[in-house]
Amino acid sequence: VEVEHSMADLIRDGKVLVPACVIRDAPKFEWRGSMLDCARHFMPVELIERHIELLSLLKINVLHLHLTEDQAWRIAVDAFPLLHNSAWRPGPGGGVEG
Image (cartoon, rainbow, N blue to C red):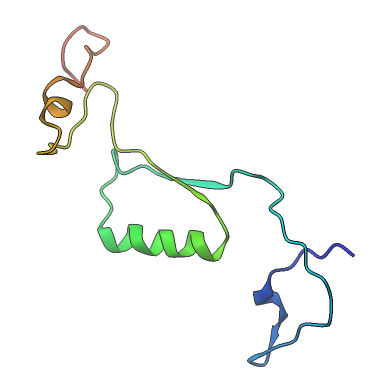
């Protein structure tokens, strides 16, 4: 018998009711993901942490953080100084706009 429920669906009045059965669990899709666009929209750490908690509850296994925009890496990372200084390409007008 195929059942399209999670264990949370089996909770009734604070009790977990699980009939005797064999459970074979597998995701329908190997890649289930979410993307946060932190490059265009500032997001506090608390919001990102809550988002990750919700992804876990929903069994979503991929988080894509969009951290850069078109022409440049905008965050200076002391461990990787060349990333900030040289990781850019000219914009559509040939300059460093963007």
